[in-house]
Picture 1 (cartoon, helix red, strand yellow):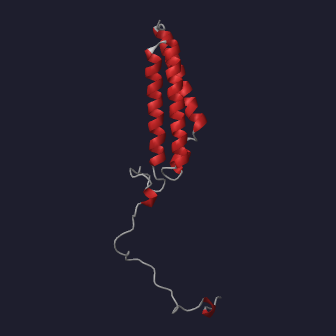
Picture 2 (cartoon, rainbow, N blue to C red):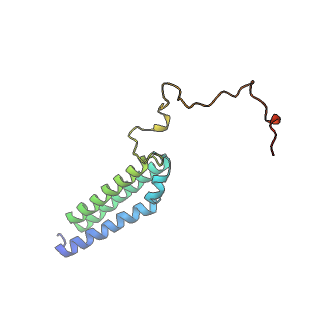
Picture 3 (cartoon, one colour):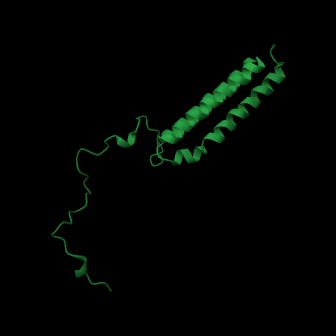
Length: 135
């Protein structure tokens, strides 16, 4: 026996609120996730825990209520929040661009040639700092 339409939408929106609460409990704010180094393993694991917890919660509530609207609204909220946090976790805080390469910190990004503004070599021939007179 399905719920009445007005009760169905209300229960679906309440389930969306529960899903949002699960993500708020398990993860830091999206601003903190975006400011952290990209593809942090702890954030990724916490996001997966939140997604599975929210999916179980949505499934349980929709099965108990025997209403499809609860499942659709709660499932859409779960997918949206999972994508939102995964995208934030892949954004590099310096470049403000999402990296698509896993563990991009280990990718060799050094240029093939030395930059033109390379620092001079201050080896054994350099003048010691004791020879400079200040003031």
